[in-house]
Image 1 (cartoon, rainbow, N blue to C red):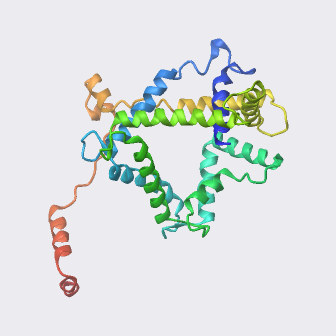
Image 2 (image 1 turned 90 degrees about the vertical axis):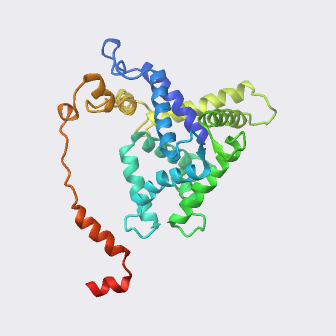
Image 3 (image 1 turned 90 degrees about the horizontal axis):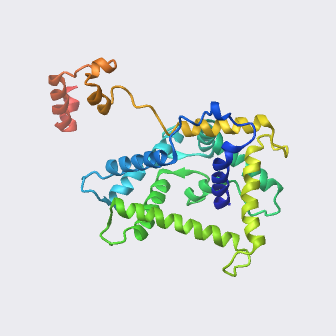
Length: 308
């Protein structure tokens, strides 16, 4: 199912521009978007920035501890967002609230979830479950219908160790940028192999014409169901245009304009930060007060109580 969703989305996004009801050639809303290489370079730069941020000792290598710490910060951010009462446990109600908020802000995710649910409703395979519930079940290792912070940390630890076990090819306990790129290539190769095995239903190591047609038709059907927003079995011109606008808005998120007061822009323009944008003024703490507070913290608890 996961492979079909990803492949279907790829087919959909590549073919969307040629769909009926799209923008005219002389009024193409996609013309000011980054080309594929620019998008790839942007994603790569974001990845490098994350790598440099995780590499706390700046040795150009990512240790398991650095990777675990970085992933804990990343995943923990979502956990703390869901943990509204701050008790270290995410209940089903709290998880659903964050889920609904995320889906409302990401229409594509909502389309995919709704489509999968619609497929399961019409499917004879009773083993299929809600994809979001499946992910929550993966986190909920003790099956108490709640997600504890310890379970999130355990998942991050296990996942990071699994990646290092395969990606750390020189077995030095660290991963370089080159090893990370190689791991991504290996993951893509494994995904392609898995997709082939999914299509090879008789497991004879080859794809027949019928198997190949089915592997193409099923993602196309999924793309159709995603486009069919009201699930009435037909794609209207309005649905086509609405989905195209959604794709355009998502693509435009990949290219944010660089602010005039960024370091690069300031160097290029020769302006001072104040000339480029308003600079806020922050109150300076009283050094004497800070020293007194620091001195109080170093005193024994009994002595601090007496002073109060």
